[in-house]
Image (cartoon, rainbow, N blue to C red; front, side, top):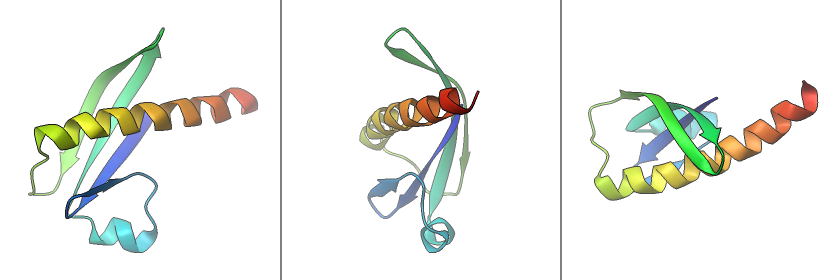
Amino acid sequence: LSVTIFKLGTALFIDPTREEAEAAEVKCNFGLTKQGKKYMIHSAQKTGAKPFTQKELETAAVLIGEKYDELYDKLKKVL
């Protein structure tokens, strides 16, 4: 599955409104899977000139894991 993290100032978010997505300074799309209880990031593509800090990437890892679980549950229901 693919999950994108957006950054505006110091805020990180997923599923932005149109206005938030347009205002975001940087975003990073992660491709991931889950093996057991561990998430595996297979790909990442960053867009934008601003950097992510180490702490922001650690927070992003938690957020994308939570979003992965949500999306995977929805996907299982329709397949």
